[in-house]
Length: 264
Image 1 (cartoon, rainbow, N blue to C red):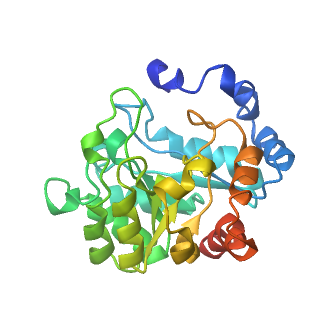
Image 2 (tube, rainbow, N blue to C red):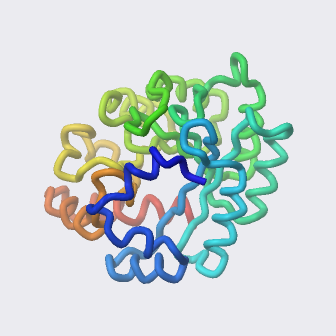
Image 3 (tube, rainbow, N blue to C red):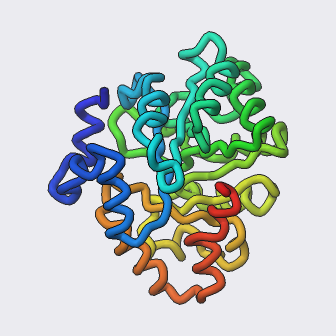
């Protein structure tokens, strides 16, 4: 169950029709077709205190996407404070078909490197994903949702994760926006296993948050974060990105090739 105050952030006139689209996987696939989008990650994470999301989201998204796995990639989550055996739960949900694990520090209320302090079982999550080559996506940057703990918004602790788990594919969602873009860029350049996702950044503002796209075009992944606040159209975001003039080679990498290589 989503907390009412969190649901109110996307249940507004600008997202008219979102509930209908999300009511079935068939509707989501039709929505992708209408927007000329081939594949989408269906992201869930366990954050009962802030968002009301419990561990049941994993089985739900596995079931929701089951008949459309070539188009809809299920993404799950394990919260080490809410599992007796986090490593075992990671193995279980990966066996369900999860293509990625999501960590949302401001909503899950822990730092990405908390395994070095008071949350040692967090390392089990990373270890299992590293062993199976499954990416871990970290929310980076602040969150406007009620009760979010933005003390965990800075991506710099992921430097520890990248060092301690060098074969773990790491994705920095939202490229640290709005306050930590330079840190996210630094981490992507420093570590071979770190990539940037630019979802949630209005394409017209991309040059402000990620001013050196061309330098790391091989490590940038496209996304919109729909139906997050401010994101109303997949197609419009794509068109706005192409209008920036980066050129066909960079557009292909960002919009398709980088993600296709990571999620074959």
